[in-house]
Image 1 (cartoon, rainbow, N blue to C red):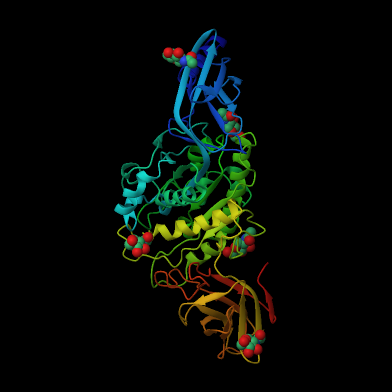
Image 2 (image 1 turned 90 degrees about the vertical axis):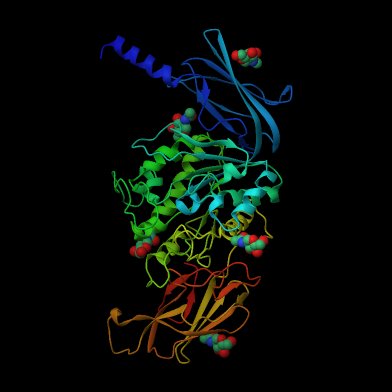
Length: 521
Ligand SMILES: *[C@@H]1O[C@H](CO)[C@@H](O)[C@H](O)[C@H]1NC(C)=O
Ligand SMILES: *[C@@H]1O[C@H](CO)[C@@H](O)[C@H](O)[C@H]1NC(C)=O
Ligand SMILES: *[C@@H]1O[C@H](CO)[C@@H](O)[C@H](O)[C@H]1NC(C)=O
Ligand SMILES: *[C@@H]1O[C@H](CO)[C@@H](O)[C@H](O)[C@H]1NC(C)=O
Ligand SMILES: *[C@@H]1O[C@H](CO)[C@@H](O)[C@H](O)[C@H]1NC(C)=O
């Protein structure tokens, strides 16, 4: 190409890109991140134009005008002064290009906390698909200060600057915006989580849904995050195998590129995530690396994209997988559940700081019309996530949000028993005799590990914190696990809960050699 051709090409490129506008996800009715963070606002304009953004409440401009000279790619970006929660405000953006002045305004802007909701189909299930749907949909209009946005399903081989398409532009909650159809908008878990936060905090909450069913963690991860776990190149297939009800793109990074990267420049409070089912069939044994690496990379990228306004260690909550299929041998569901916590069994932990987890293995729904992998009780799981957010994201010390987890085990080989001491008082709903298993062999003369087998053992609660399991038939034991099954218990009826009966004890697995076992690695 000649110089003239290059210039012509650039001019053409700019006439499409450089029309003065906000980026796709800045619109009327939106929520911007409140103080102490500062909201980032950006868009496109003529190269070299001066762009001025002001925030108004009624007639007075409440923030100083912020100027920005649009760069060579036609992008401008402004960081507003910190604004306390409230509204409505309006935003005026003025472009001055060669003395030609154009403006755009956004109306009904609120300031509050912005949460990003990610994952696959269990996050994608809409309010119209869950239990008590009509009741939940009718209540929607009582929460006009919870605002919704849904990115469209798009893939890209390269990192996009802006979303290619929007499914639901910033909206108020109504039966239509919350229950558009199956697996469209709006996410029930995201909505219920935001509604709980709003009722507690009493200020606006913005919910950004960027979700695609049947997708693996690798599709949502940048190349850099995948490299941390030894994955490289354009791995994965175009579409995942269709094991279940729904299946989406599986190629590494394609959803990061199209559905997460464009959002990095927005200031957010935190993220919630419901994903992992697809990874029971793809890179399962790497999930203890890929998931924490994705979280870390999202945190770093949102921090950088927002010029430091999104917290470098922003809170990240997730749902530990629910159930998929009854009467299946232990399979990859417990493995993914365990890996979701980086093999600690609980979060936050040293590898997953500032995270919270909603246990959901007791919320199975065999008769779900959307397939048993899609339980309809999203209320309970969203409530558990909300408890985690209160404690971890909002520092509410009074919120208990973790089910009982063992802190110590004492093995008595003579009496053939193990006492498991939990980190809190427990309530025992029933003593299902199949959920505690020990790794056992009946004779010590055999020398190979292969002679060990998992066998269910009898157990009882020995005190308000201690469970005693007995392993009479075993000459030797070298491991213990709890609830290691795809579908360990009936609906809200696992054996062990917190003392108030609300939070189930999560699954665990522990190998040992000796008689005192510390549970914190
Ligand atoms: C914005 O543009 C409209 C018409 O394009 C004009 O009427 C209005 O005065 C402008 N507002 C400001 C503050 O410049
Ligand atoms: C992840 O789990 C696998 C077994 O599934 C194990 O071999 C590996 O060491 C673990 N990796 C990390 C980073 O903990
Ligand atoms: C948004 O953030 C990304 C990542 O930091 C950066 O590459 C990009 O230039 C930013 N876009 C704008 C409009 O500032
Ligand atoms: C559905 O509504 C009934 C009646 O109000 C209530 O008892 C039940 O807990 C609700 N189900 C869920 C999953 O919230
Ligand atoms: C386990 O608990 C039982 C009941 O409290 C007690 O009798 C026993 O000594 C304990 N065993 C060990 C190894 O701590």
